[in-house]
Image (cartoon, rainbow, N blue to C red; front, side, top):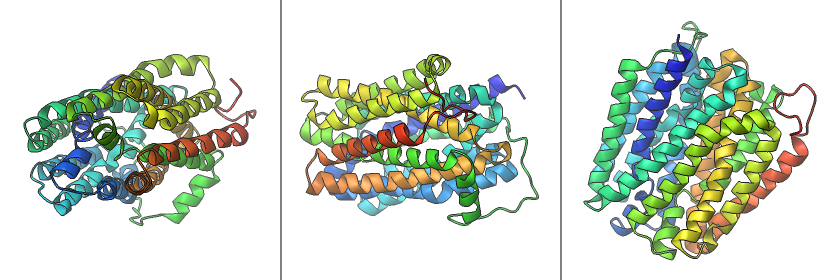
Length: 398
């Protein structure tokens, strides 16, 4: 198997799919608020159901991919995603929108499998760079997707939904034709567990050196960020008085910075700094970005704060994912990365629920300040719990 070619194909597959995802990100809250009359807390529920489905299905998809391979799971899940966007295009009530996001969450549960695919085709020393490709695909999807979504929303939100569906359909066709199987350790005789939480898997993962603490850190970081998933667009719309197009530009700026960090800068950084140093730096930037986001004053100020936030998240995601992968057995990459995605998906359930509630009942700054506070807690954990130690991959002083 040509590893370089496989990396290119999985990158393009994820990127095209996330273009569709990115189209809806800036317009979903405003569509629900303006056209359907959904409350801020209701918007949080709609955002959270997407992540709840990922929480339910990520570990299951990961375990299935360990058994039958990564390619079938990635391909079929893209069909679910495309279907969900078609339903979104014709949503005229809270419950239809709710169902479309639920189906999209099932389709979006392929991220842990995509990460396992990266782990399959990269050596451990290049794992951070490989994981950075997924982050870069996210970032680029968030550059072009929101801008396309903002543009299409001028002609009606249904156009944006159909546009998103077309990108996921293209990703499905592309994966069907060009994506090779990567899992050389698949075991067709292995019994698949369909439990929501497979306790033996959880216990085994948390017994592995460093894996448990890394999963906890990732959970807190994702929760901190998830507080703004449904509220960032509302902040732009209700506080900064941005249009859908301007909100799209704002998400595009964040995506561009994230793509530059994870697709290029992370290679430079991982060659010159130790992983522990990068985790501390990324957490600090993320804390600053979240804390000052409600106080950006103008479009320019908000863009600067969003850039700082994106630098932090752009460093953190690939490094922590790579560390989890490095400390996991090769034959269990799918299950452990799927477990991590499930745990982080649960954080993305709690974050939007709290964010929507806090935005509506406590004030627009509270979701962002909550994220800043918990990121500060993460920084303390990283400094004091992830001590430099001899023999631990990545945790030596920078």
